[in-house]
Image 1: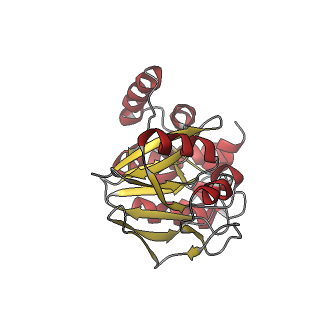
Image 2: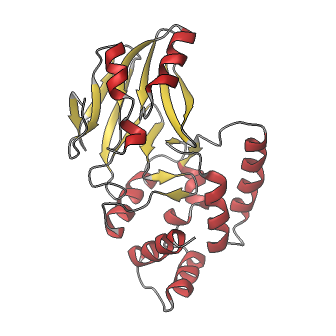
Amino acid sequence: MMKIIPVPAFEDNYIWLICDGSYAAAVDPGDAEPVLDYLGHHGLRLAAILTTHHHGDHTGGIEALLRHAAVPVYGPRKENIPGITDPVGTGDTVRLPELGVEFAVLDVPGHTAGHVAYYGANSLFCGDTLFTCGCGKLFEGTPAQMHASLQKLAALPDDTQVYCAHEYTLENIRFAKKVEPANRQLLEREVHDCLTREQGRPTLPSTIALEKATNPFLRCEHPAVIEAASHFFGSPLDDAVKVFAAVREWRNRL
């Protein structure tokens, strides 16, 4: 039976391990050591590496993992990441026969120019594009690109499990409350996720349905978000991309 395990790394990263009883694939391994520790402790063999974008906290462990096991490394075709054996983009499928699972690849530029996500088995590995109650900073892309990428992810089935790469939930909720202070589902989420963190557990995975209900970056056509973004911007905003850009700039300033 397939399991998805969060392996903490650095200050707030999660390296995701897709596991069955014998094999595991590592998603965004910024550090090899915690991955190798988990594999060794649980008697698992590394089957593949998947990476979403070129930032070091997502790729820094690839070289050491390849010294441990010569496995395929999947990553964005439009980015230069050492160690990639299988460059991928929209329309490609990543098949992991050892785990009996396959993932469709989605181009989701915005955080970086070539960022990709992996969707399959009702699970989304979205790196730093979609965060719980937030989204990634626009280091290389435009607001229009990031908004389109987020809309692509929001169109996935509501029960899709969302595995992003950082534990940013409570910080993001605090900002989301500035945008939609009367959003009841957001306030309920805060109570639930605060308790989860107090118990030392990850707030992930989320779901697409929960993100659409509480994440301001997926709610740029909702009247309350438009009103809040327009107030921040200082004049009425008339389309979702402009609303997104204003909310992202607001978030950047905090």
